[in-house]
Each structure stands twice: as structure tokens, then as C-alpha cells.
Amino acid sequence: MREREGDHNLMSKKKSKPGQPAPQNSGAPAAQPAPAPRRPREGGARVITVTSGKGGVGKTTVTANLAAAMAVMGKKVVAIDCDIGLRNLDIVMGLENRIVYDVVDIIEGRCRLRQAMIKDKRLPELYLIPAAQTRDKSAVTPKDMIELCDQLRDEMDFIFLDCPAGIEGGFRNAIAPADQIVVVVNPEVSSVRDADRVIGLIEAEEKGPGHLILNRYKHEMVERGDMLSPKDVQEILAIEILGIVPDDEGIVVSSNRGTPLAMEQNPTLTSQAFRNIALRILGEQVPFLELGKTKDGILGRFKSWIGRRAG
Amino acid sequence: MSWLKQILGTKEPKSASSAKTRLMITLQQDRGNLPPGLFEELRDEIIDVITKKLKVSREEVMVNLSGTPEEQRLIAEIQLPALAAAGRRRR
Image (cartoon, rainbow over all chains, first blue to last red; front, side, top):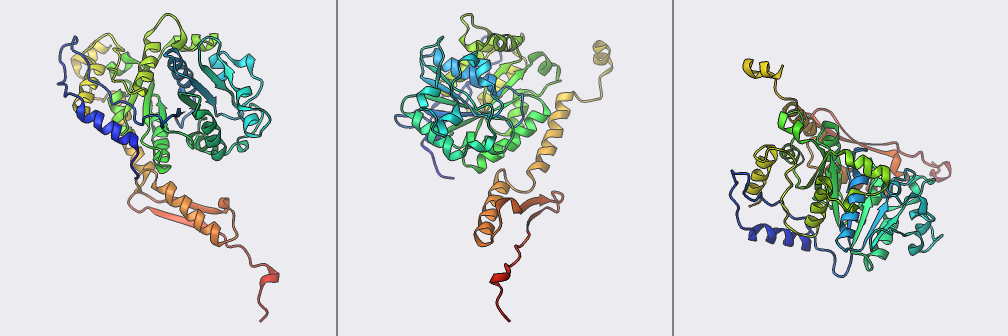
């Protein structure tokens, strides 16, 4: 497999990190997760595709919140809804009543790129390009998506692609321009199984390895032994976890309102989790949050395990 | 009744541990004997070669894995297009 500059980045970061012994007391700092690979291309945006295989695991929520978290930190971000015919990113972001043009209009030349970019008025530089609602998926090809992203690379810091569920044409379109791929997985059997398939496809396209976001994590269930732990999921799928997002009713509320949690003034555990993922994407070493009451519980042991593996 | 289970000791494994075991086995079968992604690569390249040499569409070339992990086969099946009448050589 050909080497990418980002691989060197990741390798050198791993070697230079000081080895941290697994802390036993809860007050000690937790081990650091591996940072995301790949520096942005010289003078250009980093394109990150959010995929999952299985539907309904939280791709759109993750895309909306990561885009918002990056924009809150001052980055120039555009989120593109790649689910032709099943438009959703707009309504989760609260921008559904501002759509004039969509991604297929740009590709077919009915509008200029800027005309289809909806500027979110709540943050300085956050844009959405919505999906087409009334077209079928053959309207877009992987080459179209690569060209679209190339047009945006100069002006933006990050381009997030919200991938449709499945592994067919929409998936191939969304991963074609990706510099980095994030796989959203829920800690349950069918999601993990589908994620494994997707990871295989990503590697076949030479876009691997992806990184996992474990969404809908329920700490009490994991402590009871009734839910796959982060360690379990990482062992089964054999790729690194970029972040863990708790199962939170606040997500439903935020979608109801059309205000992604990461944009809210009052930080919650969940919005902090998204912020931490954004920081890790930027290359910062951020320890996993304490998502449960007992610090020495499952999550504490996962962090120690990560520390031993990564250090 | 979980206190009772704790005293008596529960024999059945926790559901998460069953899930993990089941997944490890299932994914082994899903992936088959090829490393991740290799089946898709092989399939795409086989289809490329066949469609280059024969007048068939990509959808008409079937490439599948079949059988158990112990006796697994990669099978490519193509219905050959009939020779056009005008193209047949006079005998």
C-alpha cells in the first residue's frame, strides 16, 4: 500500500508520546487516544466522510455536530448531504427552510457552487449543501463528488460528507473524495457487523483505515455486561476509536429544535464529546470523557488498555 | 433478583460477552478466506477484464463467493453473448 504523508505523522506521534503507566486511582490523567491521521493537504481543506453501513446509527447527527463543533472553533466548514432522495442533514441543522439549490443542481450546472451553499447564521463560517430530494441516486457519480470537493478545497478548512446508509452507489460517491473516513457504529450486533463490511470496502478502495465513532454508548449497560464495550468494539473491528458519544435524549431535543448540541451555549457531556472528537481530528491528544459514575469502571479500564497499546 | 443471582452465581455469560463471541464468529464467516477488501478488488478486476474482452455489461458478470470457510470458492459466471448472424463465417 502506498505511503501517505499522514501515516508518517501518525507514526511519529505514537513514538514520541511519553509512555503512561495505567493509572489505578481515578484522579490520574487518563491515557490518550491516537490522534486522527492525515494533515490537511497543503493549502486545502480536509474532506471527511461520515459513513456506517447500517442506517439509523447517527451519521447525520454526528456530521451536523462535528461540523458545528469545528465551526465553533473558528474553522471554515461545509457539510454536504450525500443522501440523494432522502435529505436529512438540513432538518437536523435547522436549515430546511432555506434551501434553494442542492448538490445535483451544482453538478448539473443549474447554479453556481456558492448559490447552493446555505450559510448558517449562527456561526461565522458554517455552510450546508443539501441533498436533492426528488432525484434518484444515479444522478451523481464519484467523479462528480471529487470535482465538487476540489472546488471547495481552497476556501474551506473542512468538508464533511454525510454518507447515505448502505454500500451501493451513494456510499461510493461519498467516499470517493475522502481524505479521511469516520465510521459511526452503535454498540450492538447488527451495527458492528455492517461496520465491518464497510471497513473492508474502505480498505479495498485504499481509503483506509477508517476511525470509529461509537455512538449511543450507555455506560450503565456496559458496566452490567449488557452492552458491547469500547474495548470489545475496537477488538472486533480492529480499527481505532476516534470518540465515544453517549446515548442522550438531548440529541432528539436538539434535532427537534434544529440546533446541533455542539452549537449550544450550555455545554453538556454529549456536546463535549463532539468537541473532543473535533479536537482529535485537529491532531490534539484529548483523553476520553468520564461517561459514567465509576471512574475505575469499564471506561477507566478501556483507557488503561488504550494506554498500554498506544504507549 | 440480581442479588440472588450474585449469591447463587449465574452460569450464563453476560449478553455482551455472547454478542462479542457471536460477532467474532460471524465476521470470520462474512469475511471468508480473503482479507478485507480483496473480494471486492478481485470482483472489480474480473469484471473489468471480462467486459473489455466480451460484449457484456458489468451487471451480466456474476462474481460470488460460495461454500463454507473450509471449502470456499470464488465463482465467476458469465453468459456468453450469441454470435451475431452477420458475423458468422461462411462454411
